[in-house]
View 1 (cartoon, rainbow, N blue to C red):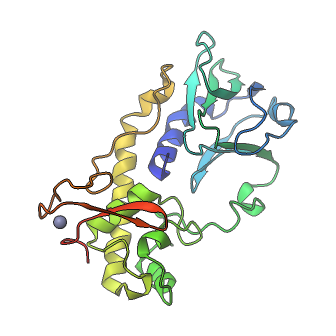
View 2 (view 1 turned 60 degrees about the vertical axis):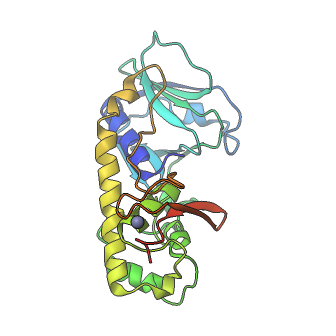
Amino acid sequence: MPELPEVQTTVNGIKPYLINKKIKSCSVFVKKLRWNLQKDLTKKIINLKILEITRRAKYIIISGNNFYLTIHLGMTGTLRIASKKDMRMKHDHFEIQLSSNKILRFNDPRKFGMIFYSIKHPTLFHKLLINLGPEPLNKDFNDEYLFTKTRNRSVAIKSLLMNSNIVVGIGNIYASESLFLSGIKPSKASKTLTKKNCRDLVASIKNVLKEAIKKGGSSINDYINVDGKSGYFQFDFKVYGRTSQPCHICQSDILQIKINQRSSFYCKNCQK
Ligand SMILES: [Zn+2]
């Protein structure tokens, strides 16, 4: 599943091809992704000029004067830039033909993605975007904020981190990794985190995400390839997916447990 770094990398990758380009036409090859697509979507966005592409949580927001096209990649979605001569591929469900003659294609085998048009900014009205917590890389996500949010909450810290009302864009992978880096057990009750825990955790989250975005930068070329292998880069994980393999710090086996139905990985020596 694409997490924040993959989404940011997608934004960075497609941005140069979209800015100041007009939407010449738009084609939809599927009725429904996660939800039914708006029936008039293709008509609504024709001739509009793209001025900006931003990310909020894991939503990609393509916008211009009074229009917003919001895209979520779901579980398996990718966006790529193609040329006219490039054949459509299996699972290409949506495309925008640009005035530059390039094409932005949305591919999504599992169809959990989302695309919708609006004249208002989606964070002002859409139920999935209106109550989002701060961006993890922004200043308003800091140790004081996390300390306040963890008070009186018994929920496991890992689940709290994955709650987008608290902080956005931290999925299973980066929650596991940042908890390892800050020496905190994923099942630890949120309210028992000390101020130092919060400081370490916030720093780890920011570092691990920045590092992943930096790595993703080197795979930006994938977004203009036509082989469709675009997308999810391999990060050098310390605990995620490393069940029974030796901890990089103490050599004990990495353990796997379920927290809130999600697989969680940690080292019982290094994380307390
Ligand atoms: Zn260890």
